[in-house]
Image 1 (cartoon, rainbow, N blue to C red):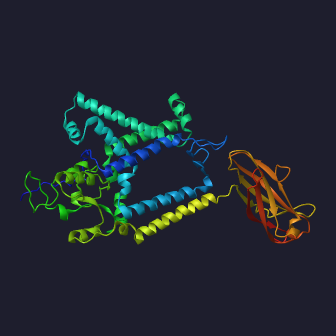
Image 2 (spheres, rainbow, N blue to C red; image 1 turned 30 degrees about the vertical axis):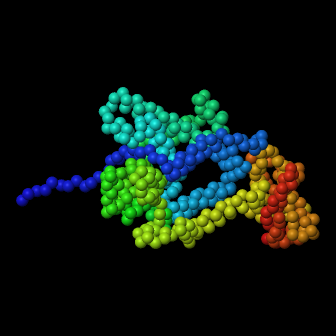
Image 3 (cartoon, helix red, strand yellow; image 1 turned 60 degrees about the vertical axis):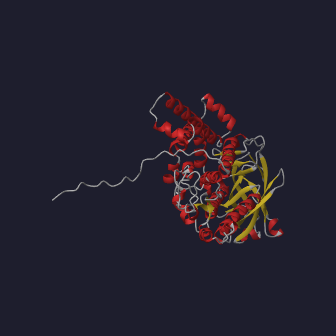
Length: 482
């Protein structure tokens, strides 16, 4: 009886095959250049834009001031208790991703994802140092010599500089950029700043230089989620195989009518940053960047064939194109119930945030009645209630606030009095950007309806004495009958 050798299971993870995309020209490549320049420019420049907010506030236009728990974005200032604005923006970002994926596939991944943007930049540097696709492949297979060492070291140094600029720009968003830059060079910056820059530099260097498409395939969850977001109306990149097949090499001076338009030149594969062949159909790795469209259109122009062998299309268009019927208008693919619902939710949250932003109270305060005891009886029979007043000064300078109380009727109003602990009257000065917490006393005269009743609704008003801004809140006054 013969024995068989045990069969080893296939590896769970295949070794990475380096991808060397070839340089290509076209409208989608130009669009990616423009978007890359805009997004990288904004990322690196925003921390250096100044914005005058007064003598006591930072003059950086965009600042995540974690030390003082505030976010600044030009004229907008977000306080910790207003974090719902940040939550709203995150929800809008998620809905926006659903909207664009449902309508246009992985357009975010192909044009705006940070991994894509920085990888494009790193590939540009690599191409500048080592040459185009064929030259880089030859260098990879070449034995280590002075040329290979020189080119690799030059490339890696440039990548590290990009990573350093990326990490440096990131920390500038959390403190005053010019001050931090001087401290970094002087060696006096916080260790957290150096550690953050080192981590951001290392991850940018590794992800953009070496991992590249591996991040999109293995680390990012979105390729797997996108299947639920896309349907037959989603516009994505596809190969028109009914027009391209059967493919075959183009022979000079010969024309084979049985052959499709695809000449199997591999241009679409050679320019793909993900290293896939779009002619194999829809694949998880495809980020719909459109570079294969540019490459194919360029080749179609050279051989005198119509453009569009590879292009953006919806699955619904396939049957119409095969049969020669008119293709559905692109806006009918985009404007359908699903995308309209996503857009309505997205726009509704956006409008709500804008309305909430402009309806924010200029004065932030709250009143908390003390429950133990509910009230205190004075020697003369007056009833005193104690409250905790929390008043936040959101301006950039010390501000005086006047506190007043209003009873339901004029008769009851005449029996009320108010006092702030530690002050001589009803006005308190709160330092800039601080929260004032103090006891507030409200007293009802002996024998008054407020003193003898159970609970009475009162209105507490706080007024900014500088500009007469006023806000109010409701509270209750507990009498002897309680």
